[in-house]
Length: 138
Image: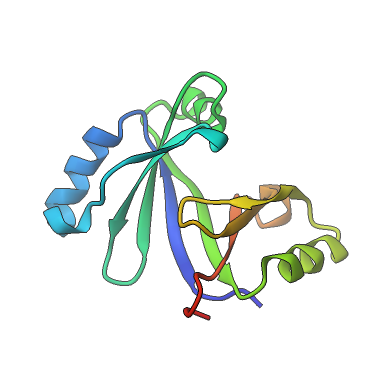
């Protein structure tokens, strides 16, 4: 079973511009410092909303998976939903046993915990990130 909604991923051509928008909505303290995830080809920044987080995602270059998304949606927009699970490997096996397409092997995500993505065609049109809950938050 999926756990809580951890975050909504929002692709953006500019984290700096998007962060300003979210500062107006949630206040300065809610917007974290951007950081690079070179292994995934993205720069990310988390915005703390009252009941979840918003993950701003900017491509690091033309090879970034976000680059293709922004080519189709230049202004940016919702990219994915991320749900927590207690055990990433058990979750991967569960999805695969049901014929769902897991996109790659588990890898470390922006929260420092293992993640994988499930193909949007198997999730009602929504790219879905599955994230192992941070320790102590099961």
